[in-house]
Image (cartoon, rainbow over all chains, first blue to last red; front, side, top):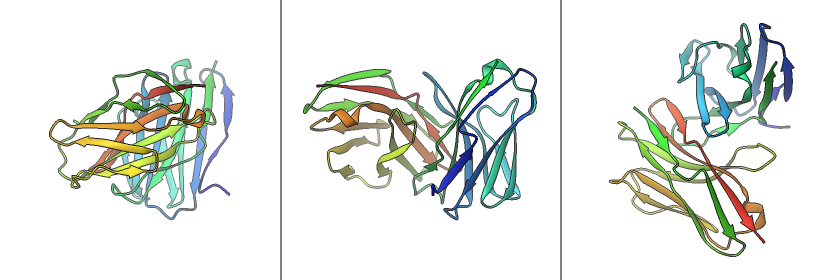
Length: 112
Length: 112
């Protein structure tokens, strides 16, 4: 089983719909992140969390919200999806700045 | 501000030859780490190499090595004896303070 699991892998949704992307990890890491990947822009940080009670906005948090339900679970919500939120979304975990990030398989989200 | 710049959107190399991917960064942190990640078509993010900023010695992992120039804030990746399996997107990343910031990526093509 993967250490960091994202669901769903692919999703097509309509403009205005609410959608949740889920992430769970078995690494035991405190830090969890949500990134968005767009061609030519790389990975941009949406939100990050250092523990259940610590949630922080990243570079591009507008239009997104998150919930850290447990140390191992970190979900990303789009309250009202719009077409320019079409992208590849990654969840990642790390134990700190000295270690690398471990990524999920990514969620390909298309908003039509 | 924490930034990472990859100025080469695409690079191409002949199989068995050597290629260097460029990366520059900026950070106000004194304690930080630098990474190169590979993203093959499977879209999985894979760690290639890691460099601690306090270490002057350049990191090496088999055919992969870095040229870390701290004063110039430069962190390039050299791939020797390139193989077809090296074809992928490569992302440079800087981890300092509370988060990891990625560059826009360089797509590497390997010609047989």
